Image (tube, rainbow, N blue to C red):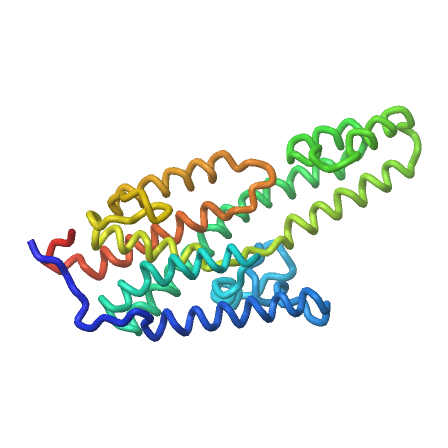
Amino acid sequence: MQQIRPGRFDILPVIIKNIVIINVLVFLATETFKRTDAFDIEAWLALHSWQSSLFKPWQFITYLFMHGDLSHIFFNLFALWMFGSILENLWSPKRFLTFYLICGIGAGLCHMVVLYVSNQQYLESLYLLQQHFDVGHFINFYKEYHLDSVADIDNFVTQWQQNPSDISFLNEANHFVNTVTQTRLNTPTVGASGAVFGCLAAFAYLFPNSEIYIYFFLPIKAKWFVLGYAAVELYGAVKNSAGDNVAHVAHLGGALFGILLVYFWNKTNKQRFY
C-alpha cells in the first residue's frame, strides 16, 4: 500500500495565499461599505436567487469571496488552509484552483436549484393569497411560511378579525407580504463554505484514515468526520427550520462535486490512499 505524497511542501501555497488575501480584502470592503451606505456590494457580488432582480451570472464566483461576519470568514479560511494546502501541495496550483472553483460553483448551483423550488412554491402560494386576500387566507399564508414569528403579527391579526371591513388592515397586510417577498427573493448567499466542503471531502477521499482533531483534542478519522458532518448537514437541509440561515444544501453540493471531481481525476490511478 502506498501513500501519495506531495513533491514539494509549502505551508501556505500560492493559490491558498491569494484566496485568503482576496477574501480578507473583500470582507474589509464589505464592512466599510456597510458603514457608509455608499455602495451595496452584496447586491452585486453575493449570490441571489434566479427569481431575484439582483441575480447576475458572475455571482456564482464572486459569492465565494464574501462572508457574513468575522467568525464566518475565520473558520472558512482556517479550514481552507488546513485541508486546501495539502491538496494544492499534492496537485498543482492550477489544478487546485480549478478544483476550488468547480466545487464553489457546484455548491452554488445546488443551492440555487433548491432555493428556486422553495421560492416557486412560495410565489404560487402568494398568487393564491392575492386572489383571495382576506384575514383568513392571510393567517393561513403567514403560518405556512412561519411568518408568525414576526413581532406583533398575532396582535395585528386579532385587530383585523375584529374589524374585517377596515381597508387599512388589508393595505397594511399587503405591505407586509410585499416586504417579506422582497426580503425572501433578495436575501444574499455568501461564503466559501461550499468550496471548503469540497476540499474536506477530497481530503477524506484521498486520506480516509488520517486523523482530524475536533477542538484540537478529540481525534477522529477523516472518513468518519466527513460522513458525520454530511449527516448533520443533510439533517439541517431536510429539517429546514425557520430562522436557519445556513446553506446546508450548498455545503452538501460542494462536498458532492469535490468527491466526484477527485474520483474522476483518480479513476485511472492504481495507487491506494490511506
